[in-house]
Length: 377
Image 1: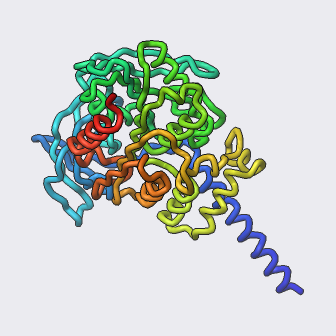
Image 2 (image 1 turned 30 degrees about the vertical axis):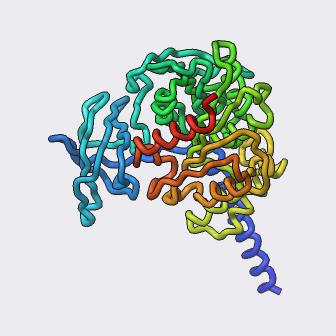
Image 3 (image 1 turned 45 degrees about the vertical axis):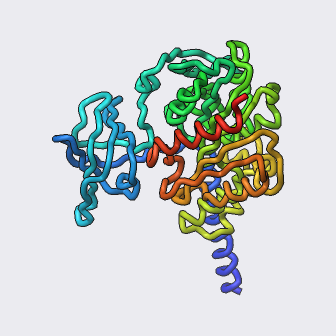
């Protein structure tokens, strides 16, 4: 009898542990995260030596944030020291502050603010349900297509600084750019627990940005969407009051099926695959989603654009086989589900949403060529 009690106790403990782990994984998907901090070991003579955390040795150009508001643009890897766990890279320019040893954050932010683009920038507010969402209105150098505006949509756990990387391509096309914020991203209206609803609750804010563009001279818009921003853009093509004005989509490392992305994340974290499925059930369940901290359950069917054709406007997808967060296979499935309407351009070896950082010229050229071919009247 005592063995039965012991076994039952063990099963209860395991069930509680798995339940807690499921909640933690589900929260990791939708809740704000803590910034990832690295060590800056040394800086000077045009070089910086950083902790090699598996990302700081990535090929390309990146942003290094330090101090209160310090920022530097960092270039190629010059050397590695595996024994010390460090990587030394070239400093291209220090855009703000004085770079020295200490702590920093390694990001894809090559533009620390929109004025680094050296274009005409205006701060505007977009009226959205429940408040205002600040945006940057950026005029092109040569407004050869004044009727077309680009709406730049950032991803989850980021801000609109991330989306500045797609502005140069829009500028080359002569598009006016509106780089937007939305609820829950720390700039738009606050939401319960700061939780993301993976596009389901955020798209009305970007719809308001489209309305702003149409009220200020735009006749059509192109949505430039990064990562989870693609979920917002895809929802807009179906639900926007202004969807007839959406001429096309530029989707960078897009989340086109969150079920697969979550299961992939669990596998990447060396967790059993069934925990990824359990987290999905938690997020879509009416009761457990509230325990996770969501305002409403996630409808994963509404967020899956890979199973059958749903898209009605042309789209360019830019993605890389080096993406360990949203696998490129999702974009291949998305393109296969929309033959003739989706163009997939793959960049080799770029981590999640770092295609611009690895090859800025190629990134811009791909967008400009596709828009000139598909969208020019």
